[in-house]
Amino acid sequence: MAGNSEYDTIVIGGGMVGMSIAYGLVRGGERVLVLDQGDDAFRAARGNFGLVWVQGKGIAYPAYARWSMAGAKAWPSFAANLHQQTGIDVQLSQIGGLDIYLDADQLAARAEKLRTLADGVGEPYPFKVLDPAGVRELCPEIGPDVVGAIFTPMDGHVSPLRLLRALVQAFTQFGGELRSGADAGAIAFRDGVFTVTAGDERYTSGKLVLAAGLGNRALAPLVGLSAPVVPNRGQILVTERLRPFLAYPTGHVRQTGDGGVQIGDSKEDVGFDDGTSHEQLSRMARQAARMFPVLAGANIIRTWGALRIMTPDGFPIYQASTDCPGAFVVTCHSGVTLAARHAGVIADWIRGGPPPDELGAFSAERFHV
Image (cartoon, rainbow, N blue to C red; front, side, top):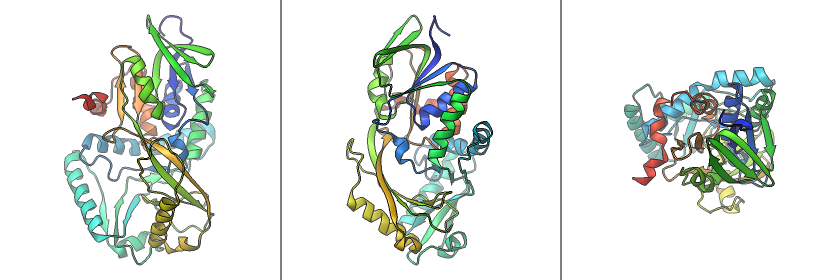
């Protein structure tokens, strides 16, 4: 603990990334405060699809593929620990995932990219290209327009709302403090102590973690770091509860543990507009119905938009400050897939342990070459 600070660590950001790190830190015995902006923030967690997903991540960047694979492998024990500590079942199902295609050329191109990625990862990267009959064995309800799919056994999905609830509950059970509606503004660093001003309140700590999503862009320079993140909108539709028909999550459609179906795959550069558009929602609904005709008659009960946090190359940023030792920035758009890593090796690193082997590949310095 530096000086006479109130907390060992302050985490700015109470979304999936911030709460995973805060949970890992407080579980390790630290006094941790999370400052969360509140419901007026642009929350990526609001639009999270809930995928624990490896397939396709890290194409042209094998370090990210290895990082994602390690995250997926850590999920079963991570979910079990959260369930034991909180009694909350995050509905993890990790029996594999499917990327379904309606165009044969797109399927072939994707398969070739995955073969190249598998050659460069340096460890087993299992996947299988399925023809329509192979897809139908796993998903009998697919439509006649499906030309094939890629199956990866590492993938799965969870309930993102249950996950966030479990992280918050476990964090507070271990003695962590969560302040909602606390919009962190000024940050000062002096004599090894960080002072964070949020509204009329000031908080001090020996370490500081910036996990504020899109807010990291403005906060990172205050402690000698860089987070060149921009928003990218995704839209989601949710159907009424349906009979179970889809055991495997896909990159476009997944059936939740409660029976509802989530549909979504839009990627839109529209600034900070987190609304919805009829054009995108209609496109996604038509595509989902082609993949699974059972959805054609389903009632849509909710739609919403949310903003992803994207770096220039789409890969995470993990970096410690040299100007303000004890400050860290963590930015990624895979808060669910990487939650176990954030609560594990990233929290250990922030606590003073060695950095994970892949961490050097995710410094923001790569954008300043």
